[in-house]
Length: 184
Length: 421
Image 1: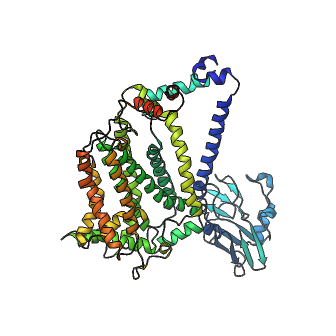
Image 2: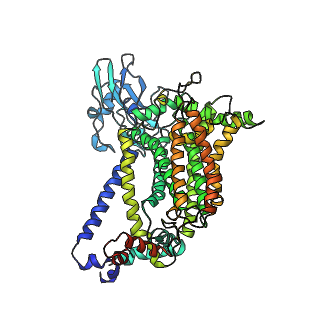
Image 3: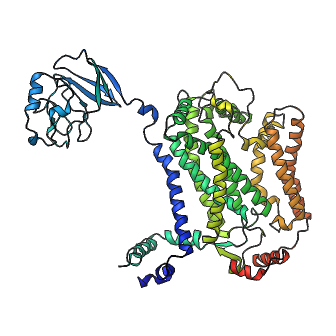
């Protein structure tokens, strides 16, 4: 400590004095002021009100037949809505949870067993998995298959094989009535 | 383990040996010898620098939300004002900031005129300064067009049409500037690009302005050179603190407009979207152009009016050669001092006339004021420089400061002087 004697002598040798107090107070006020000046600039980069106002989408599901999928837009991203078959539901519920990379039961991921609703964006690097159309490759687990890096999702949208770290995200949604779903 | 000695200092030395950035800052912002008698009129350079940075930063964030297209520009500005977080604040800081910029630069220039800061060896410093002023005017004009309101559109039409006064090539030149037969999409896009480009040019000019300044150091209220170390004090902490106090006062003034009267410097008509079929009833330029606008209108001939207006600015370039007087500061120039204040009054009068409709008595008053503006530079300044008998300035800054203190009979001037050193 003695080595830096010259410049910091007062601080090292003496207890804080009036000048130290003024200096620290000045830097503090200046720092807080600078932060407050910078915040509006930073916040202006956040989504503006018109983008936030598009945060929910209502969809009519009455025309989706069993075994059919549709893709709808929510916050500019695709949301998969699938009217699942009994086989798919059975498959999804039969899987032991401890064999899953990201354990989640099918019951947790659906509100009504026949309706699977999830964000159709691969949790690996953001591609859109195939599997919506009947002719699409559905991967090894009869669900979705991401063509970018080969992630396989099952009929509950859970990651089973490949580089994706987590299951396809389930957005907040509610059934307004039997045929209408509000996503967001 | 001593953090400062073992980590900070070696890195500092390593960098500084290869790129002497720390030495440079120390030489030009810390130890930099500054006349010890600078008054608050010398705050305005630093304030202008800070305002330039404020304008650039708020401008970048505005550009994030702006669309330079005739169909979308007005709506994108309204979107910024209503939907973007703090968009109103960023826009009002930018629009009021433009007016602040001109208030500061006019005070800065009048300071230079009063204390003779444009005289040898600071002629280039002054000329670069006038170039910055010109660049600011161009930037402000183009920036005002971007919101695409009625004043934007018709202001742009009138100002760009000035070039049509040029014989032979005038009309083709205006078409070229517009990129069409009226102000349109092409015009808006290029104005946006150039408005964004100009600040970089201004920063470059400011760099040269400061380079020239630091070569011969600041002028001072006495207008005599620094001769001995006793005449100067280091820039830091003395003038950093003085500039900070000035900054506090300035920000209070500036932000009062931003928060409480954000549209004070603007025109209500600019909240009406540009309409190429209707000109607003009363169209005036922004206040900082008004004196030159008055000069333009005071001549009934199109070409001569435009020439007069541009001459009013460009005459500043040759000022160092119009005023050949040896003494810099108006403190020691009893005659020049009076004409200086007359000139200030004349500029205010021209500004007032520029805001009025072109009817009597304003037209005649405007003509007289415009004539006086040029007479000040072309007749009064050279004659005063030749025939005035200035008082003898003090030997040195120290002598001048001491003399002033003795005169005002402050207690123990010598002791105070020592304290200042």
